[in-house]
Structures are given as C-alpha cells and as structure tokens.
Image 1: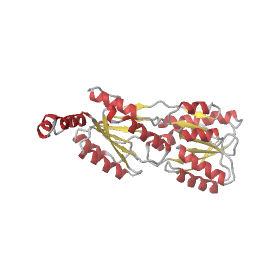
Image 2 (image 1 turned 135 degrees about the vertical axis):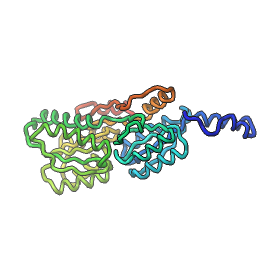
Image 3 (image 1 turned 90 degrees about the horizontal axis):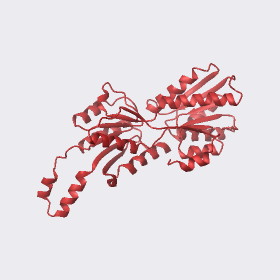
Image 4 (image 1 turned 120 degrees about the horizontal axis):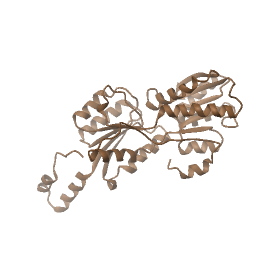
Length: 327
C-alpha cells in the first residue's frame, strides 16, 4: 500500500486522545480501492458490482470507493481522475469501450497508482499503463456459441439446411461485443449455409434488445436464429418474438442463444424460451483482491487472467445447476 502523506505518528501528535489515534491507525491500514464501473445495464453487471462490494469491505481490510459511470466513458475518466485526487491505492476499471484511455492512464501512472482492468479490455500503445486484466475470454465465448449451434442443428437434422441468423450486438466497441462478434463470426465462416441477415447493437439492455428484434422481425420473415450478445438483450428479443405471434426456444420457430448465463437466463431456459446461454462469470471481486494482495507483497502477476466459464442449454438439469449458482 502506498504511504499516506499524513503518518500515524504525526496524527498521534495532533489528536486529543488515544482513542482518536486508534481510529486514524485503523483507517490508514485499509487498502483504498477506487472502482469505475460501467453502469447497471444488465443483471450480469449487477452481480459483478455486488461481487466487488462484498469483497472490498472494511472487514476484509479495504475501503471501496465505487462509481457508476452510467455507460459513459467521460464519466469513467472523470471518476478515475477523482480517484487519483483522493490518492487511492489501486484503481479498478471496467471500461465502457476499448479506446481513448491513454491520457488518464498516464495520469494514474504519474501518481504511482496501479490500474487493474476488469471485464473489458483497453487498447493502449503501452500496456505497462495497467497491471493486468481479469475477465472472460470473449472470443472463445463466441466460438463456443457457434460450435454449440452447429451441433444443435445437426441433432435437429438441419445441419445442411440454409439457416438465416440475426445478431443483437452489445455496446459497439466494448470488449464483450468485439470478442463475441469475432468469435461467432469465426464459426459462421465455416458454414456456407449460414446466412447472417443483419447485426445491430442492443446496447446490452433489455429495452434496446426488444427494439432491435422488433425491427428485425419487420424486415425479415424467415429468421431461424437470433444471437444475443447478453442475456438482457435475449429477454427483450423473446418479448418481441412473442408479441409478433411467433414462438422461440427448443419447440419454437426461432432459436435464441445468449451470453452471460445469469439466474434469469436459467428461468428462460426452464420456461422453454431460451435455447442456450454461454457463461461470462461476473464474480471478479475475489480474483482482483487476490491480485492486489500479490502486488502488496511485491509479487508479479500475469497480464491476462481469464475466469472459469461454461455453457448451459435445455438438455441439462437446469433446476439443479441453478440451485448451486451464486448469480
């Protein structure tokens, strides 16, 4: 932990009682972490926020300064500069988009404050500006979804059919959007009979996901598959499909697949509306705390740290799996 400007010894000389000295000592012992969160746009993000808040507590030796950027990069940059002014020990950022961070990261480096990236990546010319990144392998998630779809279509006897797909993308430029689009595209390219009709951003929200799906349904009569780049977009897409008089899921007209695998996605699969969900583990708090403890001990940490992830579909015992999960 960085040394504070005001030492405990100096504080002791200035306070009026031993009890006050003890309070200053306790506060100074806490590792102060500033967390610039994207926002609260999805169930996944809510679980991610809770993971940090339950990990970085005073009982665990931390003081957490939390900032909700409401999906705006300028708010995150402002938050990071505020953290620097408050002389925090560590800055954690879940960047809204990948680019545009060089200047503020240089400011953190000049202040001697390590920066850890969570969930989404940054594109910088000098990767020494951040200590490491923790999150899901978004390209692999996309590839896993494409591979699952190919196997599912084969099981349904549709492996050689022409398949029309649409994609509701996440926030354009976000790491999850970039990786999932790329990964699924890698598998798409292997299937000449798969036709991607359209791709539009649903901004990772249910309302926008529904709006985009409504537009797709008006434009195309023959959609076989909708790929939603998070669960909340899928929930909106399902509402739009039903409102249009169509059905979805294993027994429906349209195959729906999504990413994140939050609790509500299990409910949607159990209800027969969602075919499969590809996990993006939101519980980053403990991993980031582990990294901070290593840095406190002067240890080196790996630059890229993927969290463990799986996938789930309606062929599984979803009730039992859901009962064991934390989100």
